[in-house]
Length: 374
Image 1 (cartoon, one colour):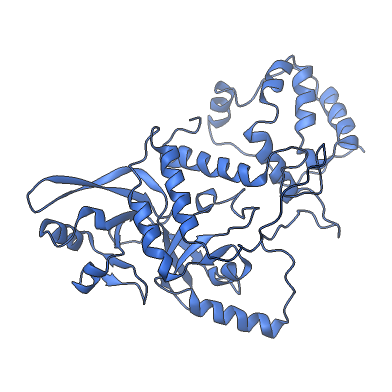
Image 2 (cartoon, rainbow, N blue to C red; image 1 turned 30 degrees about the vertical axis):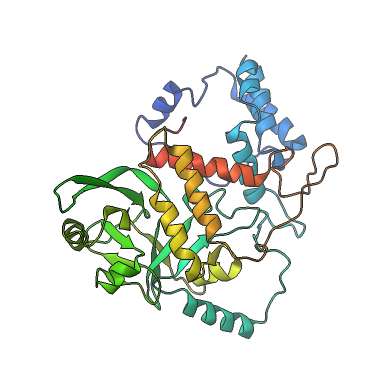
């Protein structure tokens, strides 16, 4: 009991911590280290890590006269996300392993090594250029704590290298910028730019034009992506087709950036499809979803929620007719909190599915709008 064992550390760049204190992200207090450590030691003997340290924080806030502030913040979005992080990172499972690994697809039999390898090979042959993937339809989103931009999103595969990586672009996240084009009559039109991913391809135009039009495909506009309904077009060719009245600005979506999924051993994007992290979209459903995304307005504080609603509609249109894997029945109606029901945030009545929607919206507001508090 004379020692503390720490795993990892927190660090700040020059002036960063001072700025966070100015923004009230931290509270300054005067206390002796002995008093503080004794209180933390006492708390550690009785606090369940499932509570994510929130009770300890509330106790310390009370000790420095900030009880009212703590009460106002209790149970907010940040608390719920912290509880989910704690469940995934600190809490032991039944076998004593730290971190409750939750697969969105539950109950599947474990295949033999040979069968698993064959399944991986078959799936890799299906995840090729032109494949449209939608994020998992499981009730517990695999994108709750990381990569929230992919939650209930659509990912178009652009290229699949057999050994290095799979490259794709998200098509559901409209951004706050647009590109101007001119029609044949010289009138101007704006085509909204979408966030395709965090990476750029060196030496290439960051904007990728995509259409899903049979008319344009038959006219030779663009390069087909495999045998899919999608074609990619250079910006010059797209602008020429629009100015020549061969195409309309509404025929295209424009993305900026790509998403890269490295192939490390057997960890590949195809394997994530096999695990249910992503689902392959039938070609028959692609065009209608594409048209729905084309109706999204340029992102702003006023269009944020409508844009997300249309993205979700497109995601739903890409679903299969059968009941999605991982779908479960209604939560228990027993009064009180069911701590074993992982469809709910621990010790709350908030569904994890609802929290995932909030986290996804927060990501868009923060990184595409620059307004995290909207």
